[in-house]
Picture (cartoon, rainbow, N blue to C red):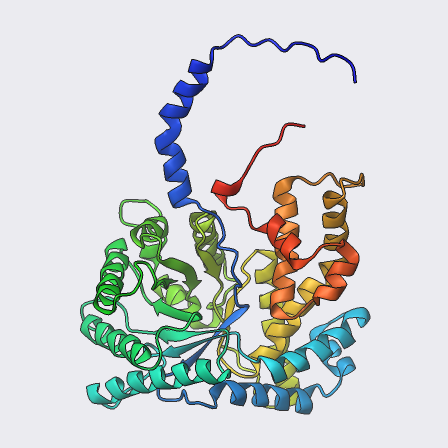
Length: 432
């Protein structure tokens, strides 16, 4: 090697040190507010089951009903593909993987509902239903029959139902503590949030529970359901949803769009209340921007068009649900709600098709990046992060297998997590 040429500078080290000192509060604020994605699995959907309908067999029952629908209305890959418009190359692998998923893990995330879908006969009835939900969920995690994520949706923090929601949450969490402790997959949902102060109230409630039971501070997180226009645009013109994330003090895990409450809040007529309405697109875009970089994930809503009746009607409902799910995935809403067992075959079909049809191209690009190979696309670290995240999401839901990913990329899952997972504090800059 030849002698290196001397590099000259004009500014003293004190200038850089002074700038760093002045930006130290900003560095701390960035790390606190925008730590990046947590790197954990995100379920592809959430299923809501009314508290009085939930029992030990709910998850298997949904899977069996979904399989029965496939057997009746699309008994083979060709008929399923024709119903949904799948290409020939995707028909068999998607159909096979959907059936396997329904047999192995029909529900990824289940919420026992104590809000819109629940009508208790009395206060004592809701007490018992909440205690029963805790017993059943604790047992499911203990015996391996639980969904990866499970929890409850309580009533909201508005005055008329606040005390009832607090009591139900207390009974449920206390019941879990009495039956082995809080499971790792526990998820809590706070609905109909309008003001950041309601989020703060939820934080104080969870803090009190943690202190009472000697739990680590911050152990309990929760999802914020966006169902009112005021949660998107506050009276002072600010994006209230961003303030809600801040008010959660690091406990917010997700923002879930409530299709029908939000649409009705704006006066959208029932026939047009759907997740692809322009009002829905605007709300979710604001949610997405507010949540970006915070580690809080955004979920789409649901469709209320149920796949029931004749095969023709079921296929119509399937196509609608499949199309809405694919549309959401393209917009980076990787999770949604499902309201009926007949929705989960098309949920998984849409998700699996999304990852399988882009798999080879994503794998090739990430392999080229990892090997510093030249090609027709010059990808940057941020794109490599997105490519690795895409492959990991496909692996998590069952759309892809690690063997085929390794074959096309030459990477292990740990390698993928390394590309996808750097949070803000872990980033380094290397001089080229």
